[in-house]
Image (cartoon, rainbow, N blue to C red; front, side, top):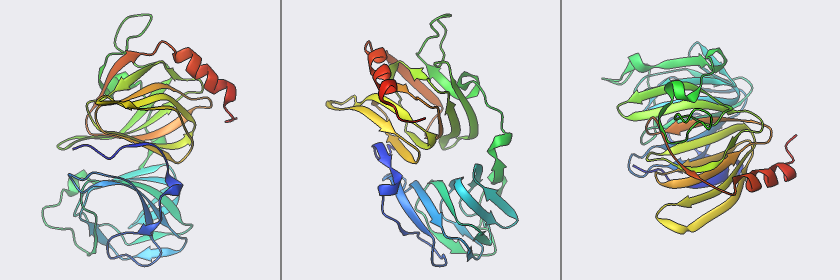
Length: 288
């Protein structure tokens, strides 16, 4: 079930539109990708200061990450950096935002909000993650829990690895359906010197920092080559299986939230000109 492809979307360029459901006026959303097979997708929800809404449930599961501002559902007040997972049919609320907010939402099916004091029958309330403060979750080496397969080899040991300077926090990893949500940090000067391709969907939202991607192309359409993609805060990538991308670097460091439809599988391929490409980016980077 491939996602739609976005190679470097500036989210602010997507139109603000209404959000489907029984919501009070003022709430809007920017759709940033869709999955035509499931009816799910990814969007950034924007809520004005002082907005309120009665309790209800959504017809799709929701991963929610607060990009900025505050959002309260029931007695749970979420602020920038908080994460939650609300299974479909689980009632939550009432809803409000004191100062206004922007929320990144990954939803798993056709989206509708139904006002209700009660949960929908047979909902999986035991899976609810109401409000997790992500700064309390420790950073880990991605090889510890996130990566299931990597053909990149540590140049010193020859063992499967990821390039030095990347750290992760896994927020959710479910097996049915297979979905992994994680925060990924890459240190200033991080370099992944080759291209990689994944057999699964991969979507990334740049929360902060900068990123350079040397090449992006579809393995089935080698003429579809894009070079020198530069991303800044609030840019988004969405890759169906089979999209080669790299080398990847960051000048000032970066902070992603990622969605994958499987545990991480990375097939690595050398790019002989990686040093020339990354150093050219460093020379011209304006992110200080």
